[in-house]
Image (cartoon, rainbow, N blue to C red; front, side):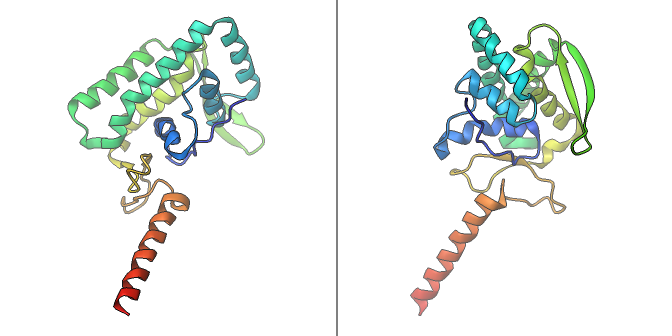
Length: 209
Protein backbone atom coordinates (compact mmCIF):
# COMPACT_ATOMS: atom_id res chain seq x y z
CA UNK A 1 0.00 0.00 0.00
CA UNK A 2 1.59 3.33 -1.07
CA UNK A 3 2.69 5.76 1.61
CA UNK A 4 2.80 9.52 1.23
CA UNK A 5 6.40 10.70 1.67
CA UNK A 6 6.03 14.38 0.82
CA UNK A 7 6.71 16.31 4.03
CA UNK A 8 4.00 18.58 5.36
CA UNK A 9 6.00 21.76 5.91
CA UNK A 10 4.03 24.38 4.00
CA UNK A 11 1.72 25.53 6.76
CA UNK A 12 -1.48 25.25 4.72
CA UNK A 13 -3.15 22.20 3.23
CA UNK A 14 -3.35 23.54 -0.32
CA UNK A 15 0.32 24.45 -0.33
CA UNK A 16 1.29 20.98 0.86
CA UNK A 17 -0.92 19.65 -1.95
CA UNK A 18 0.95 21.82 -4.48
CA UNK A 19 4.23 20.50 -3.08
CA UNK A 20 3.33 16.92 -3.95
CA UNK A 21 4.74 17.51 -7.44
CA UNK A 22 8.26 18.11 -6.11
CA UNK A 23 8.74 14.55 -4.85
CA UNK A 24 10.25 13.17 -8.12
CA UNK A 25 13.14 15.61 -7.78
CA UNK A 26 14.03 13.82 -4.55
CA UNK A 27 13.75 10.33 -5.99
CA UNK A 28 10.23 9.77 -4.67
CA UNK A 29 7.02 9.09 -6.61
CA UNK A 30 4.61 11.91 -7.30
CA UNK A 31 1.72 11.51 -4.85
CA UNK A 32 -0.67 11.90 -7.77
CA UNK A 33 0.92 9.30 -10.01
CA UNK A 34 -1.83 6.84 -9.08
CA UNK A 35 -5.20 6.85 -7.34
CA UNK A 36 -3.75 4.76 -4.49
CA UNK A 37 -0.97 7.33 -4.10
CA UNK A 38 -3.57 10.09 -4.00
CA UNK A 39 -5.46 8.28 -1.23
CA UNK A 40 -2.21 7.74 0.67
CA UNK A 41 -1.50 11.47 0.61
CA UNK A 42 -5.05 12.30 1.74
CA UNK A 43 -4.69 9.89 4.66
CA UNK A 44 -1.31 11.37 5.61
CA UNK A 45 -2.90 14.83 5.49
CA UNK A 46 -5.58 13.71 7.94
CA UNK A 47 -8.39 13.93 5.41
CA UNK A 48 -9.08 10.19 5.44
CA UNK A 49 -8.79 7.48 8.04
CA UNK A 50 -7.60 3.98 7.22
CA UNK A 51 -11.14 2.60 7.13
CA UNK A 52 -12.41 5.14 4.63
CA UNK A 53 -9.28 4.83 2.53
CA UNK A 54 -9.79 1.07 2.27
CA UNK A 55 -13.44 1.59 1.33
CA UNK A 56 -12.47 4.02 -1.43
CA UNK A 57 -9.85 1.60 -2.75
CA UNK A 58 -12.49 -1.11 -3.01
CA UNK A 59 -14.84 1.31 -4.74
CA UNK A 60 -12.08 2.31 -7.16
CA UNK A 61 -11.77 -1.33 -8.24
CA UNK A 62 -15.51 -1.34 -8.97
CA UNK A 63 -15.51 2.09 -10.65
CA UNK A 64 -12.04 2.54 -12.21
CA UNK A 65 -13.20 5.25 -14.64
CA UNK A 66 -14.51 7.41 -11.79
CA UNK A 67 -11.30 6.94 -9.79
CA UNK A 68 -9.19 7.90 -12.81
CA UNK A 69 -11.35 10.98 -13.39
CA UNK A 70 -10.87 12.05 -9.76
CA UNK A 71 -7.10 11.65 -10.10
CA UNK A 72 -7.02 13.74 -13.28
CA UNK A 73 -9.14 16.36 -11.52
CA UNK A 74 -6.64 16.53 -8.66
CA UNK A 75 -3.74 16.98 -11.10
CA UNK A 76 -5.63 19.71 -12.97
CA UNK A 77 -6.30 21.62 -9.76
CA UNK A 78 -2.69 21.28 -8.62
CA UNK A 79 -1.49 22.62 -11.97
CA UNK A 80 -3.72 25.67 -11.58
CA UNK A 81 -2.71 26.34 -7.98
CA UNK A 82 1.08 26.03 -8.31
CA UNK A 83 1.62 29.20 -10.42
CA UNK A 84 -0.49 31.13 -7.92
CA UNK A 85 1.49 29.75 -4.99
CA UNK A 86 4.85 30.48 -6.62
CA UNK A 87 4.03 34.11 -7.42
CA UNK A 88 1.68 34.93 -4.55
CA UNK A 89 0.26 38.43 -4.62
CA UNK A 90 2.55 39.25 -7.56
CA UNK A 91 0.85 36.70 -9.81
CA UNK A 92 -0.39 37.96 -13.14
CA UNK A 93 -4.13 38.45 -13.43
CA UNK A 94 -4.36 35.52 -15.83
CA UNK A 95 -2.78 33.17 -13.27
CA UNK A 96 -5.01 34.45 -10.47
CA UNK A 97 -8.17 34.16 -12.53
CA UNK A 98 -7.30 30.62 -13.65
CA UNK A 99 -6.86 29.55 -10.04
CA UNK A 100 -10.06 31.30 -8.93
CA UNK A 101 -12.04 29.68 -11.75
CA UNK A 102 -10.81 26.24 -10.70
CA UNK A 103 -11.61 26.93 -7.06
CA UNK A 104 -15.10 28.13 -7.88
CA UNK A 105 -15.69 25.25 -10.26
CA UNK A 106 -15.03 22.72 -7.50
CA UNK A 107 -16.84 24.65 -4.78
CA UNK A 108 -19.82 25.14 -7.06
CA UNK A 109 -20.47 21.43 -7.30
CA UNK A 110 -19.64 20.51 -3.72
CA UNK A 111 -22.58 19.04 -1.87
CA UNK A 112 -22.42 17.61 1.59
CA UNK A 113 -22.38 18.40 5.28
CA UNK A 114 -19.70 20.48 6.98
CA UNK A 115 -19.10 19.77 10.65
CA UNK A 116 -16.60 20.17 13.47
CA UNK A 117 -15.03 17.01 14.83
CA UNK A 118 -13.34 16.55 18.19
CA UNK A 119 -10.37 14.23 18.69
CA UNK A 120 -10.60 12.95 22.25
CA UNK A 121 -7.00 11.69 22.11
CA UNK A 122 -5.43 15.15 22.09
CA UNK A 123 -8.42 17.44 22.57
CA UNK A 124 -8.04 19.03 19.14
CA UNK A 125 -10.83 20.16 16.86
CA UNK A 126 -10.96 19.98 13.08
CA UNK A 127 -13.37 20.82 10.29
CA UNK A 128 -14.72 17.93 8.26
CA UNK A 129 -16.68 17.67 5.03
CA UNK A 130 -19.00 14.71 4.59
CA UNK A 131 -19.83 14.49 0.88
CA UNK A 132 -23.18 13.60 -0.57
CA UNK A 133 -23.08 11.97 -4.00
CA UNK A 134 -19.77 11.34 -5.78
CA UNK A 135 -17.28 10.43 -3.04
CA UNK A 136 -14.35 10.51 -5.47
CA UNK A 137 -15.05 14.04 -6.71
CA UNK A 138 -15.39 15.30 -3.13
CA UNK A 139 -11.89 14.22 -2.12
CA UNK A 140 -10.25 17.43 -3.32
CA UNK A 141 -12.78 19.81 -1.74
CA UNK A 142 -10.84 20.38 1.53
CA UNK A 143 -7.77 21.32 -0.53
CA UNK A 144 -9.74 23.82 -2.59
CA UNK A 145 -11.40 25.27 0.51
CA UNK A 146 -7.94 25.76 2.02
CA UNK A 147 -6.86 27.73 -1.06
CA UNK A 148 -10.06 29.79 -0.91
CA UNK A 149 -9.40 30.61 2.75
CA UNK A 150 -5.92 31.88 1.87
CA UNK A 151 -7.33 34.21 -0.77
CA UNK A 152 -10.16 35.52 1.40
CA UNK A 153 -8.01 36.15 4.48
CA UNK A 154 -5.23 37.90 2.55
CA UNK A 155 -2.63 35.27 3.41
CA UNK A 156 -1.53 35.05 -0.21
CA UNK A 157 0.84 37.95 0.49
CA UNK A 158 2.81 35.61 2.78
CA UNK A 159 3.05 32.65 0.43
CA UNK A 160 6.66 32.09 -0.61
CA UNK A 161 8.76 29.81 -2.75
CA UNK A 162 11.69 28.17 -0.99
CA UNK A 163 14.99 30.02 -1.45
CA UNK A 164 16.55 26.63 -2.14
CA UNK A 165 15.20 26.67 -5.70
CA UNK A 166 15.74 25.26 -8.26
CA UNK A 167 16.73 22.22 -6.22
CA UNK A 168 13.70 22.72 -3.98
CA UNK A 169 10.53 24.06 -5.61
CA UNK A 170 8.38 23.86 -2.48
CA UNK A 171 6.07 26.68 -1.51
CA UNK A 172 5.08 27.62 2.03
CA UNK A 173 3.25 30.15 4.18
CA UNK A 174 5.62 32.57 5.93
CA UNK A 175 4.25 32.96 9.45
CA UNK A 176 7.37 34.59 10.88
CA UNK A 177 6.99 37.95 12.62
CA UNK A 178 9.46 39.62 10.28
CA UNK A 179 7.86 38.05 7.19
CA UNK A 180 11.37 37.21 5.99
CA UNK A 181 11.42 33.44 6.23
CA UNK A 182 13.33 32.00 3.26
CA UNK A 183 13.27 28.23 3.64
CA UNK A 184 10.42 25.76 3.46
CA UNK A 185 12.07 23.80 6.26
CA UNK A 186 15.13 24.72 8.30
CA UNK A 187 15.86 21.05 9.02
CA UNK A 188 16.43 20.39 5.33
CA UNK A 189 16.87 23.34 3.00
CA UNK A 190 17.93 25.78 5.70
CA UNK A 191 20.66 23.50 7.02
CA UNK A 192 21.89 22.69 3.50
CA UNK A 193 22.24 26.39 2.75
CA UNK A 194 24.05 26.94 6.04
CA UNK A 195 26.45 24.08 5.28
CA UNK A 196 27.07 25.46 1.78
CA UNK A 197 27.92 28.91 3.20
CA UNK A 198 30.27 27.28 5.69
CA UNK A 199 32.10 25.43 2.91
CA UNK A 200 32.51 28.64 0.89
CA UNK A 201 33.84 30.47 3.95
CA UNK A 202 36.27 27.66 4.71
CA UNK A 203 37.60 27.61 1.12
CA UNK A 204 38.04 31.39 1.20
CA UNK A 205 40.01 31.22 4.42
CA UNK A 206 42.24 28.46 3.07
CA UNK A 207 42.87 30.48 -0.10
CA UNK A 208 43.87 33.53 1.93
CA UNK A 209 46.02 31.46 4.24
